[in-house]
View 1 (cartoon, each protein chain N blue to C red):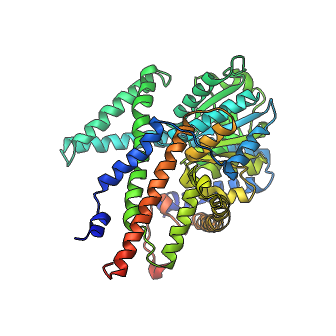
View 2: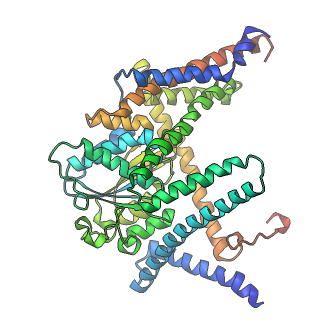
Length: 217
Length: 279
């Protein structure tokens, strides 16, 4: 019973207490004691997040060291990770304004990151050529809208076919905006529902407890 | 196998090569063609231009290695714009990598400034560096700055920074400029700063994220938006500060046109096949 108290009930109570205090502060003027307490709690979040980053690096490194020691498939890639981590972290600890550290950013991270992101242009074009077909009415509408929006987005589009700008902006401001607004509202309602479930202890996954639910609850 | 089948099953490396030519040629041989400025970009520019001299703005630098090439030139233009107007800037990033790229943009903008423009670190601008905690970190920062940040990017204690003497929370800022790139973090700025403190916000995201934020523009919660490299190019164009984004935006002309030609070609061949009963 006592184990259940400190492993389940107490964390749920604390989650609900802190969560409700944060929500109340958002809508009402709270006494300075509560406001000050909330500031401290938010500072804790930044500290815990920074610590979690460190924890992530440690666990990832352990996983790669294990891959190398057990000679798992493609273990040699893990050596790249370890070497890159040691060099980058080492130089970063000397100083983030260190010239060698910035050299890595400017001459390695930047071109690699940009190249990876730009690869999508090549794969999307190849995929669109093969599968973007007007197979039925809905696919045709999607194709036409895609063309209009792309024409609007490329700088020369408005010169080739000027009406594409007002039509494209209308598509973006109304049908697309309405769809995304619905999605945002749906997500927000879902988050509110999830919050209520967490506060009332009906959702315990954040405590590492996965419960089997009967009857599809 | 018919010619149509062969064309429809063309080796994707040929498409990659054509796309490479379409993108590389205009970058290597830049020809700046006339360009229509999008409504969202114009709104963002006009809002930025209306920020009064002497104001302090909060600037989230969220561009990373992948997104800096498209948003970086626009971010440089925005920093240049603010500093030449006499607006003071407080930078921060919610990503570990992004705070380095923000510093790179600051340095690039400082190099471009006309001689004599006040741009002293700690007086006209300050960079807080990385703020951990995502949205909660932003909430913590803007409600009590000194409880969240103790020193700036260079390690200077914030109590020793003249620009921050009277800055204790977000109410000190006149505007928020949120260059979120592909972080998808712009709603953090809207929820944690713009709405509770009644501070207008504008910013930048990658092209594919523009539709995500269009509801905020139509609701008036976001003043405008620079989208992708086109947005950066439009900022350079509106500011009369030609830079790398204009050349890159011209490359998107050819890349976009190639995409459309290939999709039309694919559909024409598909219809021929369907008419023949082969598809």
